Image (cartoon, rainbow, N blue to C red; front, side, top):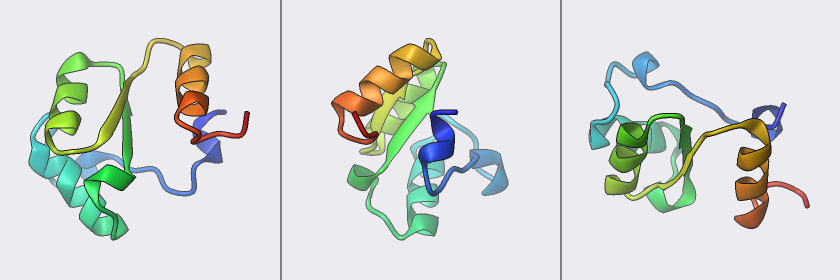
Length: 80
């Protein structure tokens, strides 16, 4: 339910790149017309989080929905 509040969601395999390659994250940012610093990446694997951060994105390691909601609210990406 938390992710449904985001206007855009994506999957790297749709662009033909594999995580954790920084190219996959930058490519998605390009599709959005956004800089990496304007994007947040959420995943349950630290390896993929590291790749996103290397590409310049904000990243959140998903553990459970409550934790994700707190971290998004802390970043002011969700209404409090």
